[in-house]
Image (cartoon, rainbow, N blue to C red; front, side, top):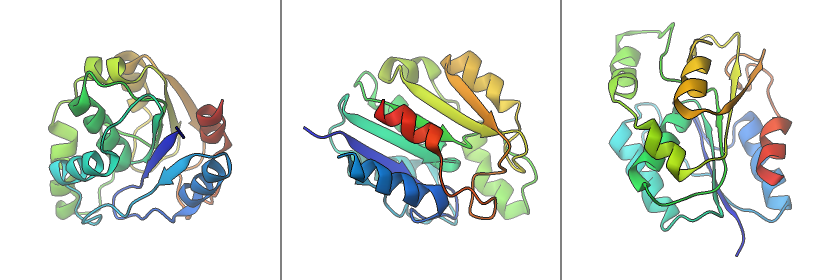
Amino acid sequence: MNKRVFVIHGWDGNPNEAWLKWIQEKLSEKGFLVEAPQMPNADKPRIEEWVDFLQNLVGKPDEETFFVGHSIGCQTILRYLERIYPQKVGKVVLVAGWFNLTNLEDQESETIAKPWIETPIDFEKIKAVSNSILVILSDNDPWVPISDKEIFESKLGVEVIVKHTGHFTEDDKVFELPEALEFLIK
């Protein structure tokens, strides 16, 4: 059976952005079955709605099921993995993932972010579900504090690559992410 990979975009995003489109094409070329949905109500993401959507999309996961997330898509994947415990999955790549946010533009953004920030995550369940997680952060991301690196390292015990690329968007001129691709195919 082919490896499946689910690519989950960020808040107010879409699956055809910058490096997300690139990694879908590269993984497809390598024989992965790639699904990159438009997440529901991307301008106002809600935990239950996004996690339910991902769970319905994936169906029955297994160790040939991989995940790639950007920003709030990372939170969605983590919360999905927590939910499917003790089911095992394959590799997970989290790009610009976060537990805290800074520089939110307005009260509406703060209201949307609040449950994502305040609802606890069971890291022990996530570690049991996937023991192969790569986190890629940036030291100049305007929204994701680099201090979240310590949370990923201490709570998940994972490798964190730190780049200098903003929030990994088209505006930041990030059109490829070779570290993520290499991790998934090796």
